[in-house]
Length: 165
Image (cartoon, helix red, strand yellow):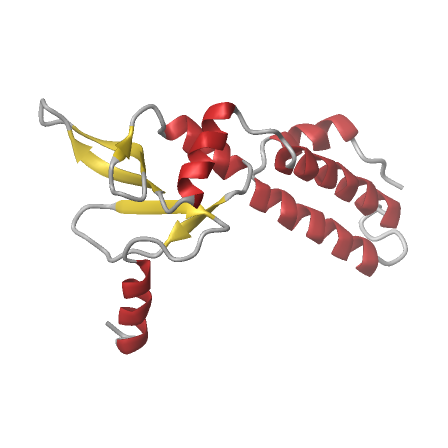
């Protein structure tokens, strides 16, 4: 029987996103349930051990406390704001992508951007908002617990009326 290399598996789990960890955990449990006697030199305990590594990494990621800035950004999102990630033109004419936090009144909240968005994404507290496609790429994200924001209801209504267009 092959033994699990714990250090290698933990290093692999540290590089995974939350979605990848969830998939790996479920995959290991399914493999443990379906494995026959000595399939590929691995038995059920090998897959259960590997699943336990992914489970611990997933729980550590989900239960990690938020920084004060990310907690404040989450509160703004729950009040109806959203993160906007789009291509913007600077004063010199150079274009680059910017992450901005927009409050429920449509104003940019200074001091909250990429780092707060990244931390909330890693903790699994954001969802993508449905928006109309524009000539400029824009992606909006908001807190998972919030209802429809901004023009998201209009997008859903349009998609129901014109499913192919």
